[in-house]
Image (cartoon, rainbow, N blue to C red; front, side):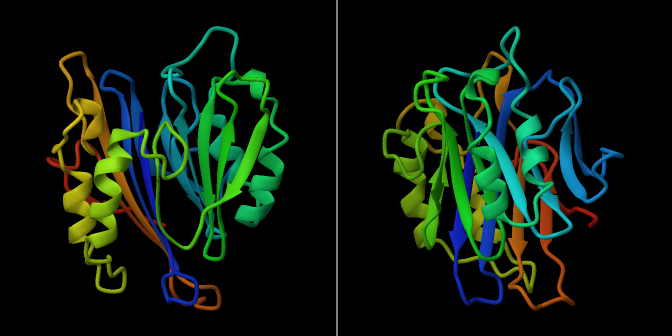
Length: 250
């Protein structure tokens, strides 16, 4: 299970704030965000060294895309394609709307079930495949204004212990200020191990079996028309309660 937090503020100088914790087996190799794909020169994303895809990335056109598993679908499956392909495909599009419209035509039986988030400065979408892998196909739902969270469950679904505990905390926290580089309140929440529902209810997961939170990301998109302002992309190359967030070169 991974976690995405999105704050949409239409009309603001920074209308899209995005945070994500990646939960994975610690032994699975990966590379931090960079331009790792010669055939996709406009994409800055972390690279899964095992399957070649990504869990989260940003395009030069100001599009963010990230993938999460659905319940009961952790890890690869024989004969199926890697879900890490999906964010890369999304990031080839000019807008989040274009990406979402393309992704609903993905053949769901080619992948284990997934949640995928695509966002730009104007709109954002939660794209999900049916939990049976076929019957419900793939659907795209707009992310509303305000703060939303996505884990392995549906968007803002209190069936997720993490959403149930932490969405109110993010809503009450000081809003990050990308202009000044102040993400302190969100960084503290991403690093939190407080839970009332077992390890999976925490934001940063630590388990005895080698599975847990292995990296964290913070992104901000400027409003359209601010051509002199670049997006912000910060990355913690490890558990966010231990690893510092540093700026990703764009």
